[in-house]
Image 1 (cartoon, rainbow, N blue to C red):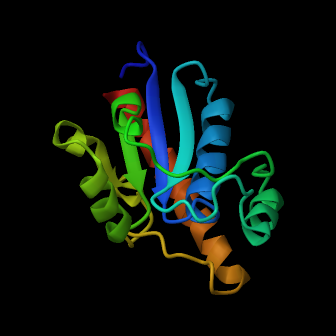
Image 2 (image 1 turned 180 degrees about the vertical axis):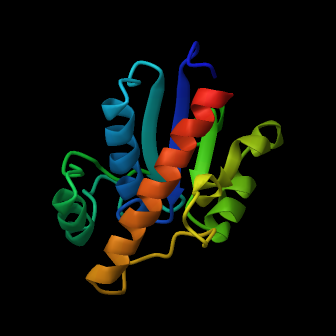
Image 3 (image 1 turned 120 degrees about the vertical axis):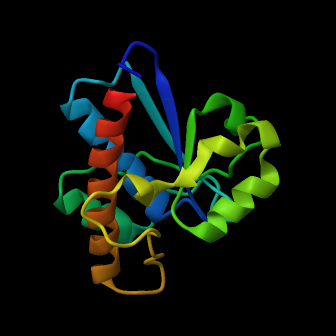
Length: 160
């Protein structure tokens, strides 16, 4: 990017209430702290629409707030077919969501779909586990992974 052209990034999980809004909040703050808001746009969505219009899970909001991320204004939405043309990168939290995205996505845009954690440097995992049915530690783990992958993604965008 060399940061000459605007990049649009869509972060995707299943319901868009835990993992992808957390990653969105983390990435937006890291971008803002780097002074790059005019070059990088971030959104999140879910492969399923059962939470459309709802805010993130209260546990995700609380865990993020402890680290200085504000998720309260975010609202869940379902991935739309036109998202694949609008976003330069569509980063899924796990392989199941990659598969769901590939089914929905026109083949010409398949290269845009990747796992979010491919940009992580310190995380040994390649999928962000869904914390929905677990306890607070799961939301903390999601934040750790999101911070790591967001920093790596920003470094990548500066280099390309």
